[in-house]
Amino acid sequence: MLSFTEENYLKSIYHLSNGGSKAVLTNELAESMNTKAASVTDMIKKLSAKSLISYEKYYGVKITKQGKAEALTIIRKHRLWETFLVSKLGFNWDEVHDVAEQLEHIQSALLIEKLDEFLGYPTADPHGHSIPDKHGKIKAVRHILLTDLLLKKKSTVQSVKQGSPSFLQYLNKIGIYIGVGIMVLERVEFDGSLEIQLDGKKKVFISRDAASNLMVTE
Amino acid sequence: MLSFTEENYLKSIYHLSNGGSKAVLTNELAESMNTKAASVTDMIKKLSAKSLISYEKYYGVKITKQGKAEALTIIRKHRLWETFLVSKLGFNWDEVHDVAEQLEHIQSALLIEKLDEFLGYPTADPHGHSIPDKHGKIKAVRHILLTDLLLKKKSTVQSVKQGSPSFLQYLNKIGIYIGVGIMVLERVEFDGSLEIQLDGKKKVFISRDAASNLMVTE
DNA sequence: ATAAATATTTAGACGAGTCTAAAAAAATAT
DNA sequence: ATATTTTTTTAGACTCGTCTAAATATTTAT
Ligand SMILES: [Mn+2]
Ligand SMILES: [Mn+2]
Ligand SMILES: [Mn+2]
Ligand SMILES: [Mn+2]
Image 1: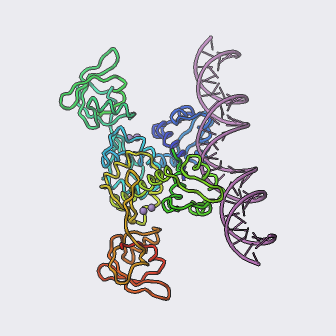
Image 2: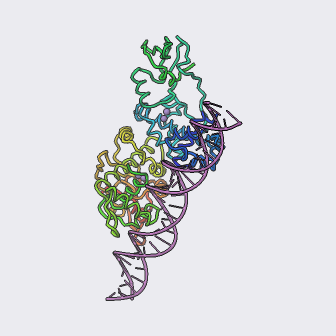
Image 3: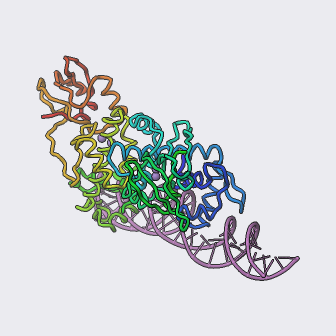
């Protein structure tokens, strides 16, 4: 059984490697785990000894099939709990991440299956992220960055890329939520900001930074 | 903030001292925590330094007002989660304890308040144990041991004392649950076992051990 | 091709929580 | 009252995850 810490490293490796498609460097991992490179090297050796990652000295780590399965289980739990907090307990979408960071480590397969059932087998969490099923399968979703959306093309907000509380609160304020209709009216040459129109003809300007954090349907 | 381990010790001290009414000895605590006396002595010093217990060398520990408040919060969380697991997720009452042992350590005041509301502010958990309110107040309940119930007196099962899975499964099998009507028909001199009658005229024999694990209304 | 800068690993230490073995105190028996 | 047994504490060691400082490998710049 994995420790709390091992689970967190593994999840981070999974995310930083884009689901296993590339190697993760020690320093990247150190930054994402808020720790030092030396500590990362230590943990890398542990996870490697457990065959959850493969490791070539000085060239970073790659997640193994087994490691990926573990990571997906943790991600599944995280996203199911976030869904529970919002849809059943009435949390806002900007309040759930830190609690889910704790809940994702609860060990009980029965609990997760019952929770999934209770929630009606949701396929996406409150931030629009796909929830892996019990076999680790993720529903493929077609989406593009809002910055790449064609002008005047009608689309729908599908997910946020990085869901920090402050970004989510900002989205609340300007009326953007998962599922809202969206169209880019104009792209400002100077700074890459966009004028967009939301459901109900509401028009707003958003920065390039904000736009590149939003995924929309093709 | 308390560690996982500190919380578990504190809860154990609270229970072993009957809610703070007597001192707890090192060996009792060691047995209940499944650890060694030497480890207990170490932890006692830590909790003492944090003013959660007061400690007189060789004469055991007493929980302080502050320690009691912490313990009650953990117990509240444990029992609310057990209630959630049974009433919302469909767990059986013999399956919830171990999961609640993990869930009780999740740190989020908001989560507990929302959970309490979601459950409709329950006052007892699936085993009939009182759930402290957010101020640590416990609803007083009048109850006696089934072994002390007068013959032929109609009563109701109110709670189990120790709720081990095997005992709870045994209760399922013979038709005893929280709230069932119960009456003692006869007390066997020889071994202290009881013949009881449940709702629907069902008659069963139960051992003295089993009976002394059941609380009934006066 | 060599030097400088950057990234990674190793070495050694620390705190938390645990353990075993030994010492000390308290309770019990004679 | 003394000796024996039981309980508790202390001493020293171990694992886990972390850190800083130093050593080493790799990458980039000249
Ligand atoms: Mn999250
Ligand atoms: Mn999410
Ligand atoms: Mn319980
Ligand atoms: Mn209970």
